[in-house]
Length: 91
Image 1 (cartoon, helix red, strand yellow):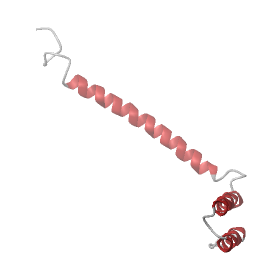
Image 2 (spheres, helix red, strand yellow):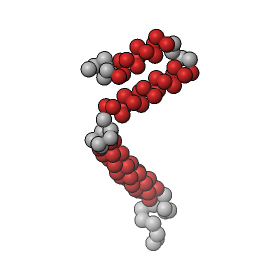
Image 3 (cartoon, one colour):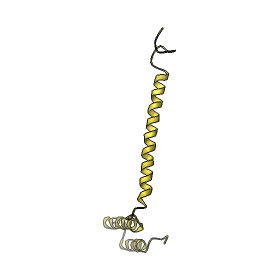
Image 4 (cartoon, one colour):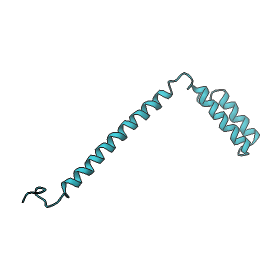
């Protein structure tokens, strides 16, 4: 007579509520992590050293690596290097 309520055992709503609790806390933690990462990524572009020159420096380094591996020839390297040094095609 006295027991778990309408059901004769801990199943049913107990399992459902436990899964909902895990889902809730998982989504809450995911939301906090996503917010912090988004904030950190948006602030990264505003740092003093994070300008177009640093991104073009990384692009030039990648170009040098491709040239060293033999993926591009001399003419292609020089053409792309000149484009990067003058600010890219959009400038």
